[in-house]
Image (cartoon, rainbow, N blue to C red; front, side, top):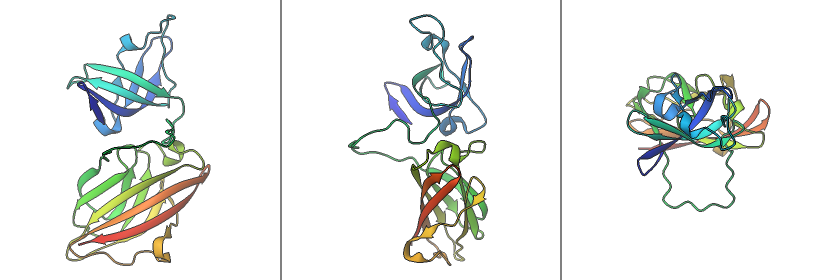
Length: 222
């Protein structure tokens, strides 16, 4: 999210758009999770040439939200393909850039779902209860494969808080399908860090329509 002059900017996904009525519904996972959507204010969608100028369903958009109860929802820009890497910036300089973590009061165990549309960096704050498998996806209903173009990548981080009896990650999945990462140092983790935090980082490269190469590392902090 970025705030400017009282307008908050979020990345969203168009789930419905009507050329005839001008109705546009946008999911904003960072704000509402994956089960609700916002209605874009129609006044800002009417074309100078007449008729509604609406984005395609399934496209990513940047929306501006005004007021605590989303009094006005502006469509700031539209990206015509659903990709995490659209909006290409060549040689940008970022000054004091921030990254928003998804901090969750939960314990790592079983299958941990990392939804990249909410954040690419997650911290579980409760002590791990058992070994776990990390499943990276777009959201509950959107696959990571549909968000990445071939030859594009995304890097995600998962930080697991550990107690006196530490655990570690034993499996990795993308969209629920098992993928074997290549680990830094050539060996997958076999233990956790007692009373510390273990940070797992994965660079996921889409090499074909449903194929990925994954480069992984684990760093202990105590």
